[in-house]
Image 1 (cartoon, rainbow, N blue to C red):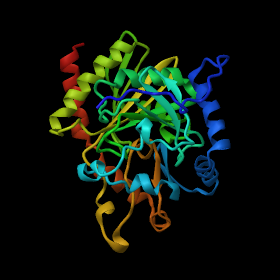
Image 2 (image 1 turned 30 degrees about the horizontal axis):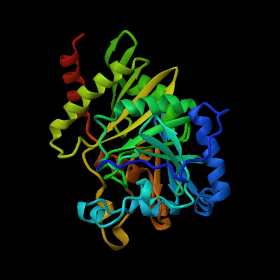
Image 3 (image 1 turned 90 degrees about the vertical axis):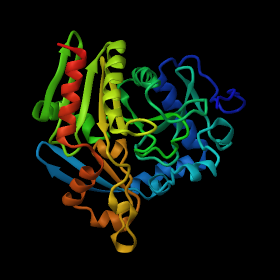
Image 4 (image 1 turned 180 degrees about the vertical axis):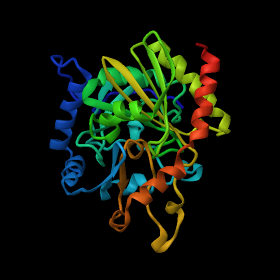
Length: 335
């Protein structure tokens, strides 16, 4: 369903001296934490987040105890539950205190009042359309470029951590917060293999990083979009109904860097256990980026390296599948 976007009192009053989207987002952030109690409390709560760090060969994973994320981590995303609740990303359902700035035509930027990052934004479409990336990937690239190198943009598939699978949206947070932001170059050097390299496009496959991924680097929008669609169709052979399961992390600094984490499962087995065996974790892009979010203290206290390894293993694709995608991509695109 498409809706007419009525600005009414939603949009933050424009300051025409500010032209960069990242600066507009910063201004929105300051306004919201000063004038919206829920957002102010959410960001103050980040000072009490507890962190454990786990060292692996050539990389690090953090576990965060962040009770403010309990709603997102435990969200019911089955069709019945979604149909019975109003969409919390639709303009008409936003809190009266929530403001926005326009971004890339059909998108707006909102401050996320239940943050993981020191500055955490949700970027929904103004239209109530499903969370599906195929036709929106170009918008993701454009949004990433316009947000600049201060922020990392990410996408959670409808069955890969999105708490609103019925409404198309991205999220953005401080660049450098996720471990992969700074580890990427070393990880590709140590664990990566070049799948394709021509002109200004480079594509890598990475195994051995606990969560296998495909990455793309280029300053050519069309090359990235066409390459992504090939990878998307190769992943579609897994047979998912809506779209192939994936999380995507995207950054821009002189060129785009896109990291695609193919998935095999929405949530690990621990999520569905009862009593003392239950661990409430619903891995999404941030978790795969190296910051695992645990909203319950009892779960955080149990976290160790073995648990981290097993969570990643349960939800991400294996080496064989990554190699298959890489080989098929090369056959399709040619040398």
